[in-house]
Length: 227
Image 1 (cartoon, rainbow, N blue to C red):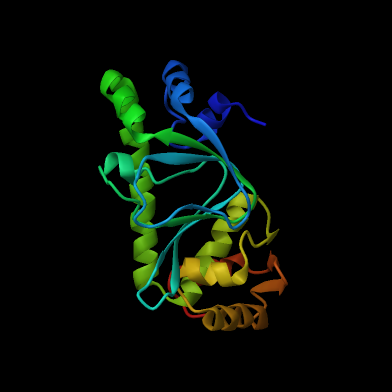
Image 2: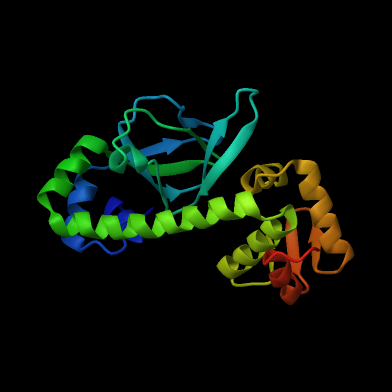
């Protein structure tokens, strides 16, 4: 398994931080293990620090007053989550975090990390740069969820996953019910959208395995054209 130092260097948040500073962060971090479906924290829990995923996947979500779950983000290896409790000076976690598989994370205490940032100006600048890039990503995500159709959201997701996997055929990285929540649509709409893309021979799908047959059409749909 990766050492704490190696895990931190592989994370996006600390990828531009010098080795000496990363070693300081490693010294204050704690390795934690969670089983599949374990809750890492609840919305409203005291915000004591943030996390880096070493192995596994994490679901960040909120619940509506009616109990409906809405996924805000799916976090994979090398990614961080709950940084807002440090940079936003939050006292409580604003959402739920749950392990989607057996998971190992590095927990970085807020108090100790803030002390490091106060004493290391270079670290502060590097972190602010990384957080700026992450904010751009979330701004794009909000725009897609609020303005784009279900067809466009699914097409964009499939194209992004193909780019990540470096292949035109791949397994979906989450179950379809979780994917629907991630895209902000109901499962029935997701099923109809998959069926439409399959009927028009834009994709082929068998259970979780998806093959992209017409990427040009997917690009057009992701830009707003109807499937």
